[in-house]
Amino acid sequence: MTDPAAVPDAAPWTPSPRELERRRVRRRLRVRRILIASVATLLAVLALVAAIVLSPGWERVQVTFFDPEHARESFPALVDGFWINVKMFLIAEPIILVIGLALALVRQSRSPWFVPLRAAAVLYTDVVRGIPTLLLVFLFVFGIPGLQLQGVTNDPFFWATVALVVSYSAYVGEVFRSGIEAVHPSQLASADALGLSRGQTMRYVVVPQAVRRVVPPLLNDFVSLQKDTALVASVSIFDALFSARDYANYNFNFTPYVVVALFFVAITIPLARLCDWLARRVTRREQAGAL
Image 1 (cartoon, rainbow, N blue to C red):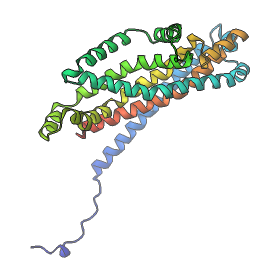
Image 2: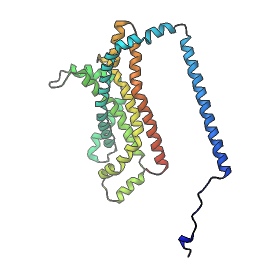
Image 3: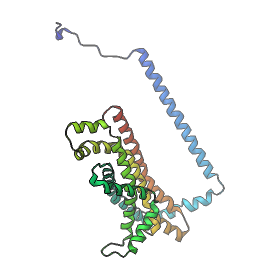
Image 4: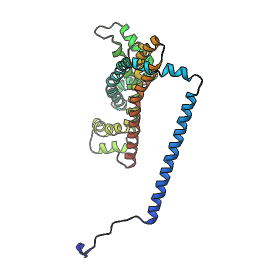
């Protein structure tokens, strides 16, 4: 048997000349693609800017929608209003997650005792998804206080938030259900072989995998939720959009609308990029067989 101490140290690996040439070619192609993409993007942006700036009505549009003075004057009120949108989103999001997961679990249950709940969950999902969110906001904000229920608040902010929760929980419930149904049946068979009950299987095997799978579509729903908080302006809640409309009505200038749009973009773009990153991560893990 050869003595390991007598074996000389292996020489460090160095790429062959052919491999080095391949790397140089790939690097040149990558740089070329980046340059072409950058030039094409720059030309497209310049063409768009030129089309807007050189249009006959640009000066009027600039004064009406892009006036720095009106942006400064309306900014404090818009920030206060946007905080209402953010607060509504932060309150509604965790409640929607809980209700949506509960709906999905109820619809996946097989116990005969849950038949009435399953029927109610199916009816809830079908009916709510068929009603526009804006209409739900009107129904809750104006309809519930009209019942004059004792001990129930008439606060428009509360009922507008409830309307958003009711609307989005139906969609999120379907997202969770699709994630649960996407778990491979072999996982259920393995859990059954280990002696786990149906509830234990859902809790320890199915739901954790389902949640990981549906994180990207869930974030997409919450991007939409953040934008739909602006619907509450239709029921006279002083959110960012209502504040912009109030300022525009008194000053005959629409610059606050552009400022509000930038507020929403500042939140939704990072969330969208996070969705893309999570989707790529889930895809890589599935391809690697981690799930």
